[in-house]
Image (cartoon, rainbow, N blue to C red; front, side, top):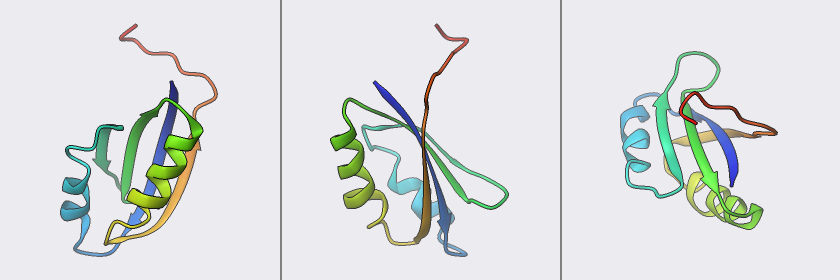
Amino acid sequence: MISVYILGKVGTGDELEVLDTFRDTAQVRKASLTYGTYDLCLETLFETMEELDDFLFNVVRKTPGITDTVTLVAAKTISKDS
């Protein structure tokens, strides 16, 4: 699995609506509103890079209210859950 963090800037007043957009999205493990440079953090998992491309170009970047994104692909992950 490919673990990816997607950070997004969201227009003022659109934060809760944008967050709710990702509530039932299969690839999103967690969606959080954040303080700082970016307003949104999506913790996601993908089987392939093609699935990631499709999600970024056809879901995230087309979501009304999202004005900018940064994508971070995890190189190695450890978890206290495993």
